[in-house]
Length: 92
Image: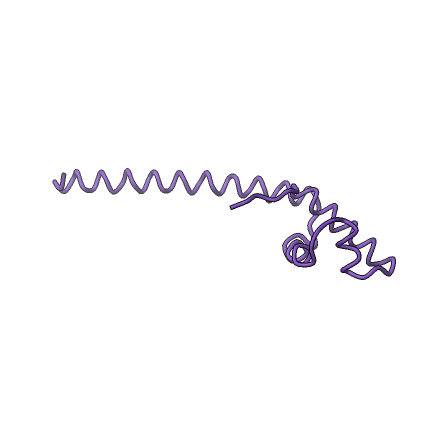
């Protein structure tokens, strides 16, 4: 899957820029064209990052990294546990 061209912080800044353009009376279509994204991208970003600040985005990214690390640990421990049960029951 292709990654985003923009970092989370850049996305939040683009959304703030969009808010400024829209508050100045520009339509959504004109504003997205101005910042160089599609309408669909704008609405997807808005649903995901609407009320987020850059510090919130950094915190979210850190939590996602930690969550992935913990999932790997649980998977490893579950595998070790299953192996030990098999050895203990004599199924090897």
